[in-house]
Structures are given as C-alpha cells and as structure tokens.
Amino acid sequence: MSILLEKQLIDWRRELHRHPELSGEEIQTTQKIKAWLAQYGIEASSHGLSTGLIADIGSGHPIVALRADIDALPIHEQVDQDFSSTQHGVMHACGHDLHSSTILGAAILLKQNETKLQGTVRIIFQPAEETYSGAYEVLNTGILDDVSAIFGFHNIPDLPLGTFATRSGAFYANVDRIKIRIQGKGGHAGRPHETKDPIVVAAQLINAVQTISSRTINNLDTCVVSITQIHGGMTWNVLPETVELEGTVRTHSPEVREAVAQKLRQIAQGIAFANSVEILVDWDNGPSALINTHEWAELSKKVATDHGYNVVDVPLYLIGEDFGAYLEKIPGAFVSIGSGSDFGLHHPKYQPDESLIFPAAQYFARLATQALESIQQNIEVRNEQ
Ligand code: NI
Image 1 (cartoon, helix red, strand yellow):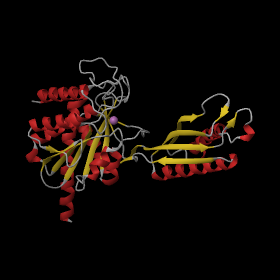
Image 2 (image 1 turned 90 degrees about the vertical axis):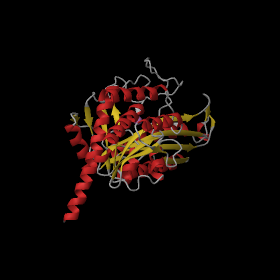
Image 3 (image 1 turned 90 degrees about the horizontal axis):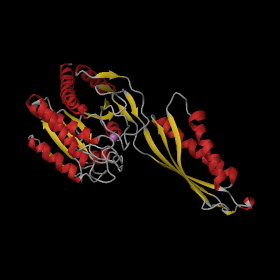
Image 4 (image 1 turned 180 degrees about the horizontal axis):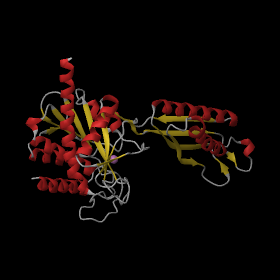
C-alpha cells in the first residue's frame, strides 16, 4: 500500500509539475486535486474560493489545519526531465507541486485512520502564495475561524533530504516594498544651478538609507534595506525632473518594521529640505513576519525526531511566506523540510528531490493526529482541574 501510495504521490507531483499555473489561475490544478481526493473518498469544496480547495477529515472539535500552497511562478524551466513544464514561461520553481502532493498524501493517510482521529483535520490547498494574497483569501472565507492550530511547510533546497528544521517565534520576515519619488526640476545639464537635480538627490538618499540598518536599528535585530531599482533621465545632456526608486525592507519584529518606516521618511524629508526638492515615500506593507507558536513548534520538532528526521537548527529567513498571515490569527507552526537541490527556490534549474514527498506526507498525518490528541489532553486536564 505504502509503495503504491508513494508512487501515486510522485505521479501526481509530476502531473502538477508538467502543467503549472500562476497565482490565482490554478483552475486545472484545483480540479485535479479535487478529483484525486475523491478517488480516496475525500470530498473537497471551494468554500467560495475561485481557486483552491478545503477538505475535512474526521469530525467534530477540536480542528487542526494542514496547508499546502498550489501555485507556480512566471519562470521558464531549464530542467530537462520527462515531466518538465509544458507551459511556456511558467514553472513550479518553488516546489509547491511537492507541497501539494505531500499534503494530498497526508490527507489520504489520515482518511485511512479517520475513525481514530480525536477531532477534525482540515486540509487547505491554498492558491496564490507567490503573490502573498492566497492566505488572506482563505482567511476571509471564515473556514479557519474555529481552527485551534495550523501547520504547513516549505521545502528547502539548501537542506539535505531527511533534514527538518523549524524555530519558535520569528522565522520568515516582514517583506515590505518601498517606492520613492524625487520631484526636482529638470533643465540643461550645462546649467545645473537653474535646476533641482533629482539624480544627485537620489545618490544622497541611496547612501543615507543604508545608515538605517547600520546606525539606527540595534545591530542585534534583523533589518535589511535594499534599493533595487532606479529610474531617471532620458539622455546625456538633460537633467530630469524626477527620479523614481524602488526597493524592499526586511525585518522580523513589528517595532523594528515601524522604526525603519519612520526613519526612512525622516531621512527623505531632511534630504528633500536640504536640496529644495520634494520626496514622496510610499511604504507598502507586504506579508507580515511568520511567527511560530512555541508549543506547536516544539511538537513539530518532537514528531520530526520520532519520525526519523535529522532535526537541525535553522537561521532566521529574510524571505517572506504568506503562512505568516494565518499565524497572526491562529496558533501553529511552519516548518522546513530538506529537498536537496543544487539550485535554489525560484531558479529555472531548481530540481528538488521528490523522495521528500512520502515521508513528509506520513509526517504531517502523524503531526495532525498528535496535535489533536494534545489539544484533547489539554481539554481533559482543564476539565479535571
Ligand atoms: Ni514557495
């Protein structure tokens, strides 16, 4: 049975890999997952989501949730394999195909032991993780309102196969986007005194914002400020009217996030004043930091050790993950499982080891079962007191 299921999960992963769909467009993916679940007697429904699915296994309270993300990326695959992407410029380059088949496997294993479950396991196939909107769409359905704990994972290519890691507290970062517009006064490049040159101002600003992390924020806190785009000017002998900059700020605590936003505005104001230009700063809050609940991170690790994973320490990540949105509302834990690829996530040559899938499916079935038992035990202890 288990060998058959393992082969089935790998086949499904390859089918998803062959036909990747972008965030919010996961229509075929959703239909396939629904049909595959149905083969094993699991009924899934959309609960108002335009893409993505939710299925319950077991019955009654408490409820714990397992979440997989299902979307792909606008990347043209450069891996030559018999299940390479058939969609030009679209690729499962973040391994959400592995995540989906893993959680499909967990759902099937849980279904086989449904009568022994001490509550309900709610399975979430979430759309649009890459655009950081899917978690909010799922939350907005209200389907997670009565969930006591939620779990999810990402495969990590840097970690070898069989390796597991997670952290209590902060894990993934606040990922914010900044746009800065310097409104100067253009003119002849030979007569700069008649202009308010936004290019010189941009140079000052780019250097000055680097002092936010080095001189404003405690160096023991994480803080990255990166300017990633600069647009200004059309030719060699004209000073432009405006320069536009764009970039990103990565932090882990809400206080540091707020302090960076404030300091950035202050620096912009000061430089604008000194140069008699106007500087507009637009701060766009992206996904919030992913903060694991201590209790559930510890249970995740314990189950991983029992399951035979090599549990290792993991540093804070400076990337984003929209699972953080769930953890703002619901206790739970997000974990990393090694997928051993030579190329990283979002790389056109990313090629994770799919033998991660079956053991991870067994792991999540076990984790959900034990999480329900742990909640039941706590309820009983409280009732006895
Ligand atoms: Ni991803």
